[in-house]
Length: 177
Length: 188
Image 1 (cartoon, helix red, strand yellow):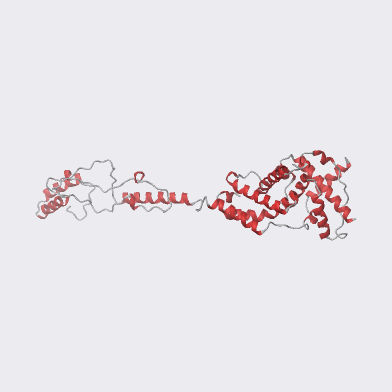
Image 2: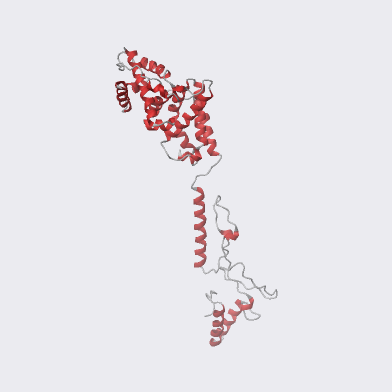
């Protein structure tokens, strides 16, 4: 990013190619409409272009990029008639105990069918928990980095991720049985 | 409480990596943005920096360094060849029109125009560059009615005529007045 900030357009292309897929899937699985995901994706990258001269190395670039994406996503949610999803503000959701079961052995359902089911269960997660899970899966960010991206304290980020993992593992277990 | 502990344990296992959940997730598809969107974003990113800078970042410092090196080189060359700088504000006497203008030694004259400046180097106005001019020997310093060359020719004539004492005396006067004048093959 420093290369691009200093005027090297090729440096931007390297960053774009490295992160575009993860960023697109994160946005697509959060908003679930391809056209919207594409628009958000473009906005995020262009926000990055506009902010390049203020960019300083304070954190991992992935954290910086997904922080921009999170902010754009929150802005998108707020503009919807339904407003910001309750999962971002109602921490009581985190106290719900998801139905946990052991994951199914991969032999019981083939991997592709499991994946298709998992995709549905991910879509059924509350937005904030889904976001924590997608950030972990798509970028490999730690709990602390997820907290930084989503602007919450590490405990909240951990609770969201714990909830998502427990619920998805439980769903996979049920499907397999 | 027991459920919470179990969830924590599951989360720790998951965070250690390569959990069954992550393995299944990797099979959910690797959607990518459409190619036209890639092209549009990359074009806009390129345009944003392309309009601002067309030269590499090191170009300006390199140009400045080249200018300094050239200037110092010129000054050193001039000092080795005995060219004395004359300040611009030194008033030069106006020679009498009837008196032939004395000529200066044929030392190469270097003016700021001769300095090679890289095309993109910052513009340096002539005032900022030290100006050097060859030493001008004014008519007032030369015996009346004589040019430098005539004076030297007279000394040579005295020596040829065997008037060595007079020739030496004249030469001493000449050297006293023009210690920097290169005599070369002139009378000694």
